[in-house]
Length: 367
Length: 79
Image (spheres, rainbow over the protein chains, first blue to last red):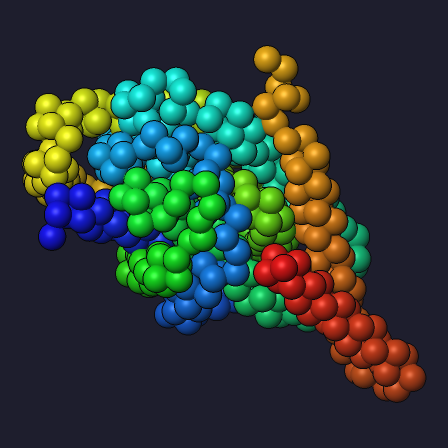
C-alpha cells in the first residue's frame, strides 16, 4: 500500500464519520414535529427516518457534482487539502457544539475545504462563482423560501379546514404527517449524503482514481455515504427521543404537516439544481413560517437571528480552521505522516472535549 | 463583480418557483382531502348519503392528487 492509498483511506473514513455525525445530529429535523404531534411513535419515527435517509441518498447526484466540481478547482487539490478541510469542518462543528453556538455542518464542510484549498494553492484553487452562487446565496434564500411557503401554506390549510370539527382534522393531519415526515427524511438524505459523496469523489480525483474533467460518482461511494447517514440517523434518534419533550415547541398537526411539506419541497427543488443547503436552516425557517402563518408573534426571531449569524460565521470560520489544519499537516511534509498525526491528535481532543462536556452537562444544542 | 454574474439567477429562480408551487400544492390538495374526510363524517352522522358520497369522492380526489404530486416530484428528481 502506497502513502497515497493510506491517505485516501484516512480521508474516506473521516468523510464517512462526518456523514454519520450529520445523520446523528439532524435526526430531529425529520422526526421532531411528527413525534411532538404524536403522528408517529418515536421508535417508528426513528426507524422510518433512518431508512428513508438511506433511500434518499440514491435519488440524485447533482449536489455531489457541485461539491466535487464547482467549489474548488479539482485539478490543484491534493488529498491532504481534503483531509484538512474535513478536520477543519469537524473542529468548527465541535467548537460550536461545545459553546452552544449556531452552526451548519454543511456550510462547515464547504468552508473547511475552501479554506484548506486557499491555504494550499491560493485564490486560484477556489471557484468564487461556485461558492457564492451555488452555496452562499442559496443557503440564505432557502430558509426564507421555506418560511414563505410554510407561512402561506398554513394560511391556505386553515382557510380550508378552519371551520371543521377539530377531531377529524387533527387525526387526518396526523396521518398526513407520516407522509410529510417521510418526504423530509428522503430530502435530508438526498441533500446531505451527497455532500459527503462529493468530498469522497474529490479525494478520488486527487488520488488519481477518477479524472478531474469527466467523472462519475462511483456506486460504492453512494452506498457508503447512504449507509453512514442512515446509521447516524438511527443512532442519533434515540438521543433525540429522550430530549424530545423539552426541545420542540408546541405545534398542531396541520402546522407540522405544512412545515415538513414546505421544507421537503424547498430541499428537493434545490437538490435538483445542485444547491447544497443546510437542511437544519430550511426546517427551522419552515417551522417559523408555519407559526407565523397562525400568529405573527409565534415567530421565534432569536432563531432567525441564529440562522443569519450561522450563515455569516460558519463558512469563514470553518475556512480558517481548514487553512490552519492544512498548515499543521504540511509541517509533517506532503506524505501520510501529517494526516495520521492530526487524526490521532483530533481523536484525543474530541475524547477530552466530549468527556469534559459529559461531566459538566449537555450543551445548548447548535442549530 | 455584480452578484447576478456570480449567481445562476435562472436556476435559483426555477428552484424557488418549483419549491413554492410544490409546497403550496401539497398543502392545498391534502387540506382538501382533510376537508372531505371531515365533511364525510358530518354527513354520515346526519344520514345524508349523497352528500357523504360526494365528500368521500372529494377526499379521495385530494388524496390521489397528493400522492400524484409526490410521485411527480420524485420522478423529476430522479430524471
